[in-house]
Image (tube, rainbow over all chains, first blue to last red; front, side, top):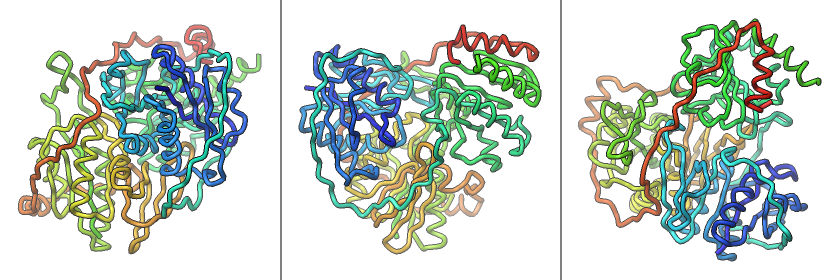
Length: 319
Length: 248
């Protein structure tokens, strides 16, 4: 028996979720008295994982896996799990991890719970608290297969240092199966923090009055090192790309801080951002439903409040 | 081209979420059910392929008789026929096994399912169907073109778009972008009348087994009241975010 995490990396660096998964995996490993393994793909220096309690890293370094495809990465994770007698696989909630999870589940004939928000209530059966109804509720799910997969909601457990005394590393290889699926190209903004990875998200709604005013959102986001997001009407009207739309039919947000400017707070929007830890709203309408969901609120005109907020934050940051 | 669109019958996005039977079941009382929005984006894309590329569009759901109005709506939107696999599934794995069994019998070229349902948010079914059938799979799909046996598709990734190509058969996890909100088809009277005549076949479930079960539901703890800060006192907000909330 063993626990394995898939520690994702990008441009040769571990993603923050890799450390969160390691921290979470460590806690389960301690509960169950089994070793914590980590799989990495094309990642050279894995030493950082020792800080979060990984017992053994299994490195798959092969040019064939240079490009992410769900089929090939799922095969790596499931092969390593099979070879190491793993009974719990822990994956993150990144777009890629959620893409491979169901494929890994089929290949291991495993139970799979996505959107898990806490450590297991029990290990036998593996019982987990998950969010559902787009964060409007939680459920308790028991996984009853021999091997089970936990999809951990990003930012729900946090990163906890717990250094391993010795961390082993081993190289492994996995053969690639033939597939007609080819990645043609990737169009990705470089150097901009994404909604999925951001600690802070700044979001704009119809209160901004038009796309020409989005510099307010962008400047505020830049000051905070935040990702930018928007409400559904804003994306429907084409003011912003729908990749920025957060809410029930858009992206979920689980940041530490979510700042909504001129967003009224429709129930679908609030559902999508419910996992964010601290919510701030700026809206001219004191009756806006967002005030009921927020931790801090300012009733005021975004066009006056936001520039002042940016100025004050810049002063605060420069201390 | 034979297309299968998998439909989930879900509470409307504005529904109040409550639970009954000591928090073990969703309270359907007064709840309006709709086609899962991600499935509806996929269905609309399929109907376009029916109109322009003579595709045949079948819809399927795994559920009891209460799901039939949702399937009729899909027929009114333009699907050619519908299957209801008669069971109350326990989890996504079971749904995927049932749909995969249907696909083995009917051999579809393209299988479209929403990337996730808005009730359980599992994001499991399309990937598991692809895994069970060993078909190509693109989830979070924001664009899809099929020509002959060849498909090109776009996948929304964290911070961008990935463009891929592959051969059919394939499974798509549909989302907004595949078509836009304004493209969704509102059934007209003719469509609704025709839908009554279209085949809706109820088929028995296979012996699929679930790998998980839900024992209870709960709602988030009620939130404390918002702290209102005067618009002229931004310093206080910054102080609270730094010292109280500790997020900046």
